[in-house]
Amino acid sequence: MKRVLKSFSLIINYKTFIVTILSVISSYVCFHLGLIARFPDMLVGVAIVFPVVFSIGSAYTRRETALQRFSDFKGHAIAIYYATRDWTTDRDAELPKRAKILIRDLLIAIRLSFRTSQRKDWEQNERNIYHIFSRLSYLFVDLRDHGVQSSDTSRVNQYLSKMIIAFDNLKIIQAYRTPVTLRAYSKVFIYVFPIIYGPYFASTFEDYSANLEYVMPILYSFILVSLDNIQDHLENPFDEVGEDDIRIEANEITSLME
Image (tube, rainbow, N blue to C red; front, side):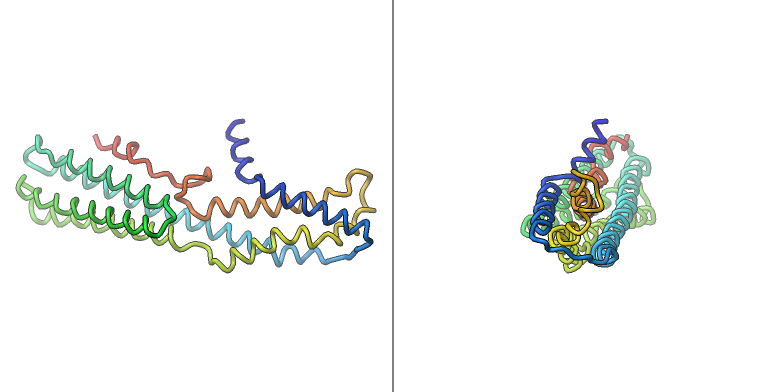
């Protein structure tokens, strides 16, 4: 029950109530001033619902792609740890411990980087991430000193290369989202539509029983703003605000490296 209420609070917020109140006021004023008009219902679907649903679908697809890329990153990171642990002739070496620490630091840096929205902070975090990649690459040089063949060292280096590619894919997903113009268009119509449709809502008052005249403006406002809130939470899959976000848990992943 608590989880349901939390999910409900994410899609029904202060913006929902502001737009609802404004649409009710607009309908009330239009009715008492005699401003009545029969606007086509299909305009809502063509101008608002279709673009918003398209944006939600695009954001969800981007999130699914991010999950796949993060799985690739996680899998190759664990493979690197296993290589430093099992491929060496000296099982008491510090290589597995050093690899585990570097991978943990890398996951923490990526999580911090993806959660920030400031370009200056992002650039600094990205330099730190590639510095850790460099340290991880330098670690592979020590594999030869512990009995690992050159061909196997090259294979481990390929794991690192795939980790870098997966990170770059995640970075692109985080940086390039739904087109800004489409988002701006959707938001303008979502927040303006329930208000400018006041004459239409006023024209339907006689079709409803007493005290039910404002059902339509309330429903329209709740539905449209809720769709916009859903899209907002899916837009950035790494900000850890929505319940569908991707959470990079460094301790959880490194706990598997035993």
